[in-house]
Length: 260
Image (cartoon, rainbow, N blue to C red):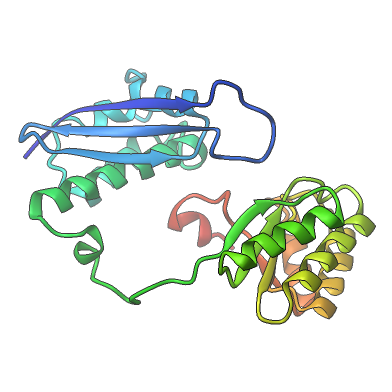
């Protein structure tokens, strides 16, 4: 089996706002083969930039468009394909949109392998570890305590046992943030976990204050309170609070997580 084409489709709502809502647009990657099997991948990135990463012509040895790298390969050689995409985009890649597109292509390759073998992809990856996974609701933080309470009540009524609120008004006024978080936890009660995503809007002093306030509320985690590159700040923060700190969603690939 050989890959014959890689193309992409941009999906976009008629109108897009600057809200932190990644469902407003999307890039779908389509990998076609000479045996009629087509694989699909999906990417949360800047869709126009991602499309350019696929379609770009080869500029020089480490500036290939990824379509040119992938076409002609056997989709079952997915590790070799990944390494070649990494090397041939090395000068302009290694993070950001290039890694996003590499992930979408890799997803499509696994889709092809699953269809070709007649097996679910999780079986090809080693099989099930758990029969089911706990789901949590995820929403933008409402502007007022009353709206927070109504949203918590709605999600609890749907059966959720964990809720994450993020972005929205968070990160601009610490006192308001703490009030909204406290309202969410009070409405949720002891049997429902609350997680908070600040969206990288704090500096260390503010993050420390909010994390310590969260300790008293038993908030399950505080997500991305600091800019992604503030590694020293994260080191201090995690050593200074018992609140779980979640971060790393801007990182790309295993190499990024191996950095000291």
